[in-house]
Structure formats: structure tokens, C-alpha cells
Image (cartoon, rainbow, N blue to C red; front, side, top):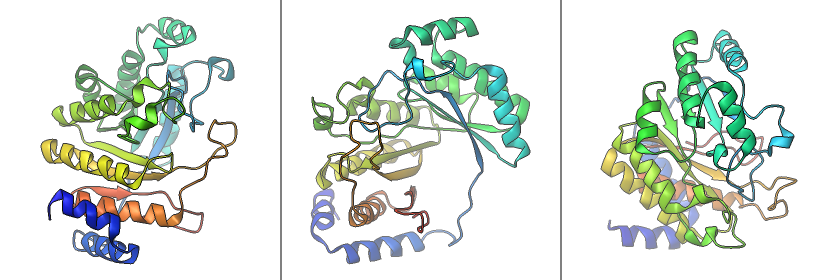
Length: 289
């Protein structure tokens, strides 16, 4: 089926038909039982130069005890994770905080580094060599040079596409004022990871003002990148949740139907080579693969 025909089919077919076909495609490939790798969470820094209107991870310097987790604290978290049976260390951090905050630049200098990537490369290497945990790195938009450096100290990396809609970056949109959420920038970074042959996780965020057509644009763009480089191991379909103390605290959340439609569309577009993951729609549900 051509992309045009598949797009029209996804936009017009009943949800029950799409989910049935999606399940059949999923079940036709691989074992019915899923395995997973336990990870310990290491938030290296919660500073970020972006101002996404729904984010609760990023904090201003005044709301943090320190701009970056110091090495001793990182290693203590990693060792405790290894003792608990974890196999991976999930490094999460904001995007290039030193470009926005003097506090980040000062903290890096005190640690003996110039950039966040410098510190990340060093501490991820220590975690790998001293604890045996395999770092998985979510460090925002990276360059080819960054990927080459971090590839030596990690087993995999990730960057959410979130949305390829330029419209959402305009004034009043959820990505206005966030230079690292520019669609072309994020797609180029995901492509650079493919060129470096890095096992990669990405995904889309639904319910932030995008249309179904724009979600399909996202999924086709990710499919094309995977066809070119073969590096996407997993695509996450993340549903927006309104959080207190954010600009979008009162924004409507996507319905269960919207989430299921997007999961089905992702499976039918991406095929069976890529894992599809989605958080539960409620505490009663399980992850949808």
C-alpha cells in the first residue's frame, strides 16, 4: 500500500479495525512474552535551556540544591542500582543548560568541564567501568561529534521527536521558546544517531495541540529514518498529562481513543522491526506493545 493510501486508510477506518490489524501484525512477529532490562534513574541535571509548556522535569537554578549531580552522588546512585539488580543506568538531563544559565557554566567549571556533554562522557564512563551498568543516555539534541564521544561509554541513546509540527513552535504553541524542539533540529539529531549506528529510542507526544495528520507525519518521518539507518529499536507513544504549575495545567488530555488510534497507526506504519511502547492510560492498565 502506498503511503498516501495508508494515510487515508488510517484517517478513515474504524478504530476497531485498526486495532485488530495492529494486534495481528504485532502477534505475527516474535514471542508473546516480553522481557525488559531494569534501569536505575540518574537525573544528571534538571537545568534546561528550553521552556516547554508542559514540562515538570526542568527546574530553575534557584529550585535546585546543585546544578549537576556531583560525581560521588552519581556513583552512589549507580552502585545502589547495581546492588538492586539493575543492568542499565538511565541518564536524563536537560538540553544544553550552560547556554542559558551562568550557574550551569560555573558548576561545570568547578567540576573541571566546559560543557554538559564533557561531564556526561566522563561520568557515564565511570559508571560503565566501575559498576558494570550499561548507560542509556537521553541528553537532548546532539551533534555527530557528541554521538561519537558518547557511543564509547553507552549501550544505547534516545531522543523523543515529540512532534514534527512547526506550527507548535509558533507563539502560543507548547514549543515556543524552545530552540531544541525545532522539528528539523530534532530529526537531524535522530538521523545523526543513525549515521553513528547507535541503538536508539525515540517517540511522539500526543495531545499537545497536534492533529492526527501531524502525528502521521511524525510516524512516517521516523519510519523513513529507520529505513535509511536501521537504528530505531523503540518508538514511544506518550500521552500528554496536564500537570500543576505548568503553562498547560488546564489543557485537555488526549482520550483513550486517541491513544489507541495512535498506537495502532504507529504499528501499521512502523511494522514489526520497531518496538512500540506506551504508558498505561490509567493505573489499572499495562504497557501496550
